[in-house]
Length: 210
Image (tube, rainbow, N blue to C red; front, side, top):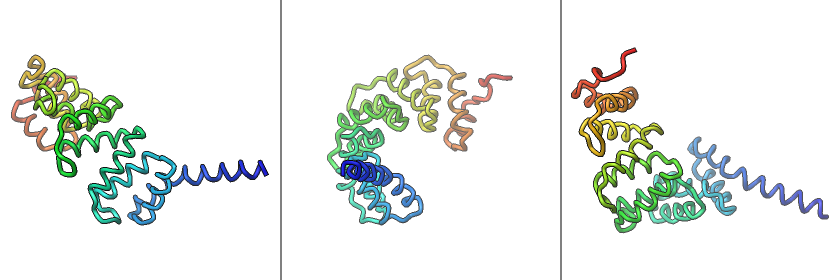
């Protein structure tokens, strides 16, 4: 009897453990109703990835009626369990004021939590907040630091902003060589804005010649 109990317990864990990955596979196939069921099963077992996925489905109206408030509630549940993407989503929500009243300080709080765990979008958002003084005193050195963290992780917008800060000398000394390095990275992805900055400031002249 004890052996059977352990077998059932292991099977239960396996079923719930696979629910998120099964749901993700179904979601990618646009089988949204089936995906939602799998995510809900995983969420019952406190899977924060599944909770986040459900929030995304309600934001995007993927197989469900669009419901930003439900999305917000699911993001909060996922964030409570440490989901860094939910941290960033909550920051976006508080920054936009579209679901809850706009609150830059709360947005900053959530962006910082995500950025410190390596989320490049949150790091970019922090750079933007420190540039504009949103929910915090403007601090171009901190903005530069967060843009750099985001840029190193491949965020194109951060690469462009970081490059421009080196051009303008915002939070740092003017450095066209560093500007060229970062703008070139963004330009190589096909980004038109980066291409315009590249040409306008003749940044090719500042690239290392090999």
